[in-house]
Image 1 (cartoon, rainbow, N blue to C red):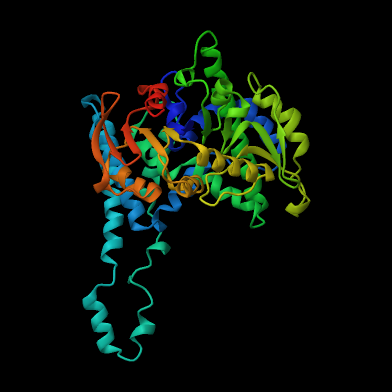
Image 2: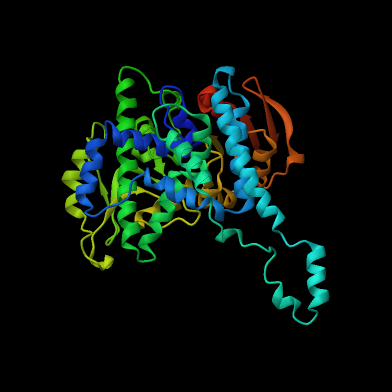
Length: 440
């Protein structure tokens, strides 16, 4: 029996970890409040650092005009979804969303009307029959990527995004920030500094990664403290004898099953990496760890960013594997770990996947599942039987939508194709032990 857990598991009531698309706002509020000492320790460690999460907003807004039309449409759809179910007392937020949608639609209209249509192309070929192929070097008559937004558009977007970093819930700001201020996208962008020799990006990555680590450690300790007298939600119901692979960083799974039955595919909070030697180093007593003190005592003495040549610098980073489709090898230990994950999947007769949506950023893990087909697999996520998710399953398990039959699982409408069952539920709404028992 093998359990695979994703971010949705840590969204369980009583744990309430944020998802990646809202994580940046939580980290920002942490650094401005209880994590202020973390921010101070990191800035002391990284002299000359100019980065701040608020400064990201201006850069994100400047990039709006160069986004592809389908990306801009996706942002509009996200805002439309956010305001669709708002209560009457939130009419001011609905109006805010309508303003954002209107502005983006105007931008999309410009992009759409700049496309080179067949009639115009035909006239170019008729007027310049010999040079037409050289003249038609683009499918647009206007280079959208070189346009700049007006101050009006920029100001509206900036003020909206800043609302998303404040303490109050603002649905429109959250919808925009989920895309424009995604911390995983930021980590990917800055991590590349280790490969393209950009010391400024490396310095920014150190700040972002250790800020994220500090927030997650503080949040994890808060959850563990709240549940000292009882069992942790979801995790407390995992049956004995199960091995588990998690794509989360939290220690909840290891606390329940032990180190020998748990694999952290993306790394965890209890280790960090020295980048020049690729040594993976343990963090003792992660439970109760004071993030600011650990950064001052253990991280800062091993970081030196004062040399102009980054190759003479020293860096240690949290053992959190960035969400790249092509996974970087932070340490040789990860090669062994990923091979072990493949072995566990290969040997499992029954796999339960909870809270994991098979996102494109996790294609490396999805590839391992593709390599070992013909396993009994139960997938438990709220969107499990939506057309979009079923289509995603075809790419992973090779099961087309036409192969699925409607069935009942734990009293819920579900879909089954051969050995694959798609169960629409949150992780804590299904008895994992019962699923494994049925599949025994």
